[in-house]
Length: 174
Picture 1 (cartoon, rainbow, N blue to C red):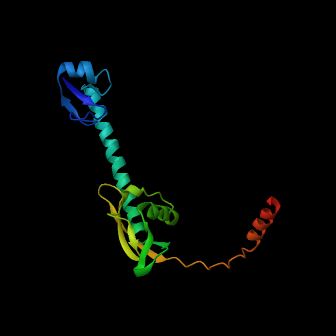
Picture 2 (cartoon, rainbow, N blue to C red; picture 1 turned 30 degrees about the vertical axis):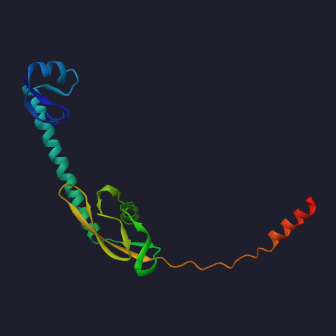
Picture 3 (tube, one colour; picture 1 turned 90 degrees about the vertical axis):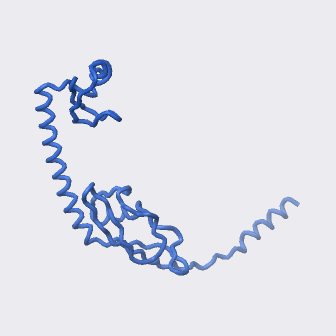
């Protein structure tokens, strides 16, 4: 029996595929669970229309991603971090930090999982980071990690008052 799959079925077919399957498999499993429908001319026409809609949607998504990639090419992400000797960071710059700064700069959400870092950035300086926007569109962003200005030290408070209170309490208990 020929059926058109409405959902992905592992190791059998993907949604939108038309395939010949055993009659019992289609009658007892696929059709009752609404995983597939019988391949009639009306269903085949629906399938073709759905493919056209998906193709237009994919093309629009690709265009948007390419436009955003051009914006990202011109973007420099500047991050300030605390660093120690030999320009080593006390922490690290992760893809989440980069995504947060990109959202602030471009007002677009960038999924941190799309940022391709083999390992977190742990040194000061300029780093090239690629971002996979879609299957075919990848953008490269320049990430500059600079040393954070050291906070000024505050003068220490006198701690003579605390011992005086403790001595007064000791006298009361004695």
